[in-house]
Amino acid sequence: MATPETFTTEDLRPPKKIVVPLWVALSLKSQRLCKIILPDWLKIDNLENLLFKEQNFPEFSPVPFYYFEISQMLLRAAEDDLIESEKIRYSLQNLKETRENKIREGLLNLEPIPIKNYEDEFANCGTVEPRESECFVQT
Image (cartoon, rainbow, N blue to C red; front, side, top):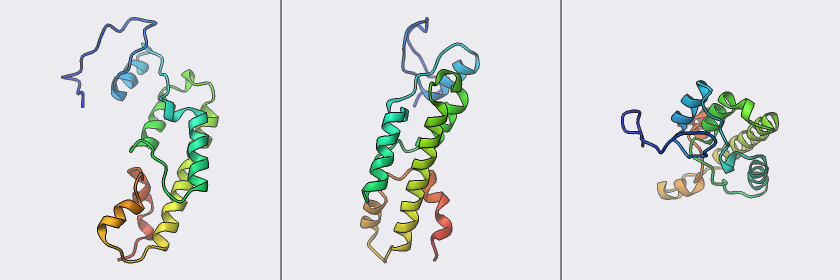
């Protein structure tokens, strides 16, 4: 992972498009030195496709591990760069709620199983999703 001490990049002159770490993009954006382009997974068509898969298939769709946190940072910082920010927020919220419901249902139906199968049961869960559902886990 690039840190402020180790990050180097090619020449950052407009209108050049370049991929940089999230913290660099957010820093440049806060100084009004760049325009942020959303990653493909955060575009409305892909979010709607993910939502469809979550609603219609039992397994979790693969999303970036910190998808919700990253999307919130990008939406907060770059709302002026986005065409359909409200639609993106709405789709993200629906996706998050659908995944949370899937976790709740999975936990309610969970029977004692070997640890190796537990990982398969909740593959592709993001970092916040199980944490928000921990009130449903009883010891």
